[in-house]
Image (cartoon, rainbow, N blue to C red; front, top):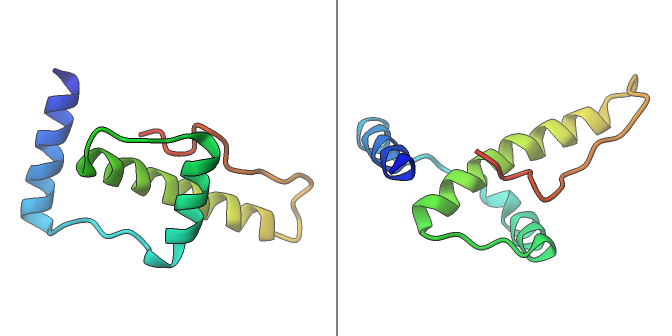
Length: 83
């Protein structure tokens, strides 16, 4: 039931604000990451939600690893798409 509520809220937000957009420049990385970790999703809406979370984490990892003052590196793992 909780998932149904989340999907309904996403649909409301989409209808008010327009559909959220993914960064198409990351399509190849997204597909590679899904294959590496065996990710599949129940619906297109579910995949979109996970993709947007993954993109947020991808941006964090990329920006962190490019910082000259960092003393460690981070990477995406199997949980990088968690909402």
